[in-house]
Length: 133
Image 1 (cartoon, rainbow, N blue to C red):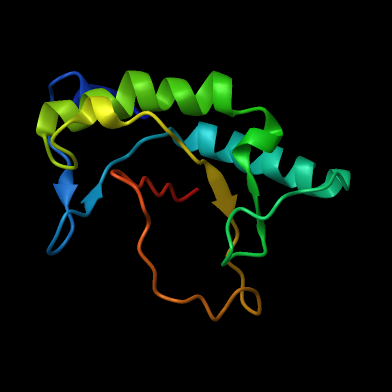
Image 2 (cartoon, rainbow, N blue to C red):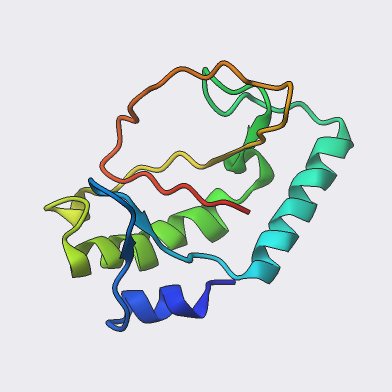
C-alpha cells in the first residue's frame, strides 16, 4: 500500500522535495490504488449511517480513522516503521524522532459550501503528515 518512492526514500534512496520556505516537504506516501481503496472505505462508512466523531474542532465533515479500526493495523505501523525512520534519516522534522509516540489520524472532506471558514491554526505536533487522496 506504500508508494515505492516513499519506501525508497525511507530506506536511503531519494530525498524529499522541499516546498517553498520552511519545513514543508512533498512525500508520496501511499500508492494510488491504496488511496482509491481508502476513499471507497470512507464512502462505505459514511453511507452506513453509523455515528462518526468529528475529527477536530474546526471540521464538521470527516472521521477519526480509529473509528474505522485503522489505528493498530495501519496508522501505528506507518508511524513506527516508516515515519520515525524517515525523520531520523533526514533529521528534518525533529531532533529526537524517538519522541514520536502519539498519533491522531483523521480524514477531513473539503467541499464547496462545507467548512469554508476555517481559521489559521498551528498543530501541537512534532510532525504533521497531510495526505491528499
